[in-house]
Amino acid sequence: MNYLVFRFLHLLGIFLLFAALGGVIVRRLVAADAGTDAPKDRASRLAGMTHGLALLLLLVTGFGMLGVLHLGFPVWAWCKLAIWLIFGGIVVAVRKSAAAARWLWWLLPLLGLAAAWLALTKPAW
Image 1 (tube, one colour):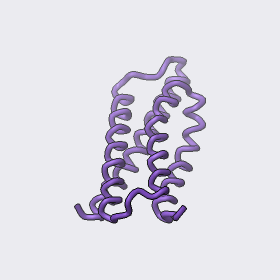
Image 2: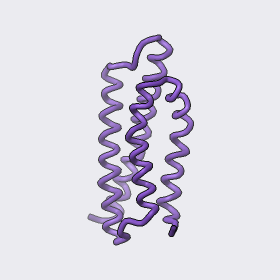
Image 3: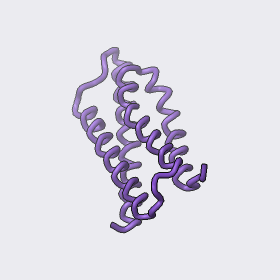
Image 4: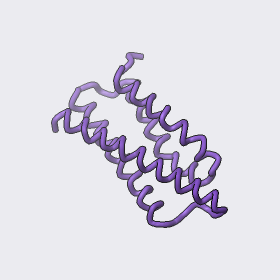
């Protein structure tokens, strides 16, 4: 497949991931304000499914771009994989704690910024 196709699909995965995480966080905060446990409605299921789809899309297209560029698996790619794992586990933290959801609302964009920096600069460590 063409590098640009992988790149556009990767961007789609990023947008889906942040939309899903925003939805999960907002649903958790609304439930906390209402004094209930984590919600189990359609919106929460949609956000959870979108989160999983986004993670899959990011993983496949990320490895696809590495393959097309013949880069092997450098250290910065390992760091991005670690960030991907963190983004995957965030949903668990959000569903367990509304306080974590409040902090993550501000920290997740910084984590995304770190992933973008790694992708754009490809530091040679």
